[in-house]
Amino acid sequence: AVLADRVDLFFLVYAGELDALRLALLQRPTELHLLDRHGDSLLHLAIRRVDTAAVRCVLAAGFDVNTRSAGNWTPMEEAMACVQACVGADAAADVKAKAVAAQQVLREIHLAVQLDEQKRWAGRRETVLRTLRSMPDFSAVLAWRIGSYMLGVATLLRRFLPSDTYRIRKRGVRVRVDSTLAGLDYDALTWHRGLLSLIIRFDAGYGEIWGDMGRYGEMW
Image (tube, rainbow, N blue to C red):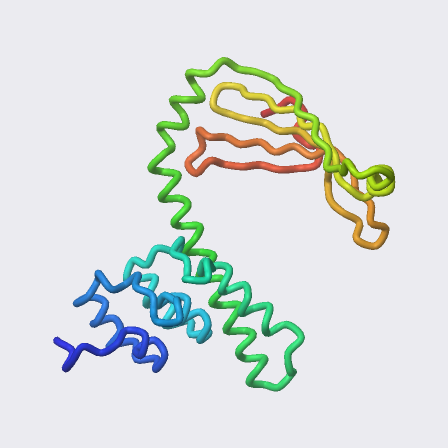
């Protein structure tokens, strides 16, 4: 099948003409990542239209989810903005339906980003493993603090600005980071402290990451 004329791809997304859009993308794959006169890509437009089917169609054509609009927005940022725009909006039934659709669009973009990261990791995994194996095992301590050099301000802000000491250990192709900064108490404006361990196992299939509150001890 051939399109009768050179229909604008962005019009097809806007109109929801998905069959024509699929055909056009097959015939004109070099136009997949073009931006329109507003600086948006096909995927950004589909997200803003909160059209889950159009989002799936563009992604299935091989759209790179790292593509930014002229405004420097990623598809993930665009999807999150659409969801946030629905929060606190009118409680009308059509608005609720749009909010549900926005959540679905965000899930589709999030899944696409995860799949892209897995592909990227597969491409650099062997290089990372070779580098780690060539390095000796080590243990390091990194202390950091956010503060201010302004007279009188540093003391005032010390309670509110975070600080921590990280213990970083490397064993074989595994890395562990222990810290104590566990989160922020928004009501009291103070920082929660605990025992937090982040364990990265680069020899796992997808750079397996574990995180828990002081649970693992030395078993990693």
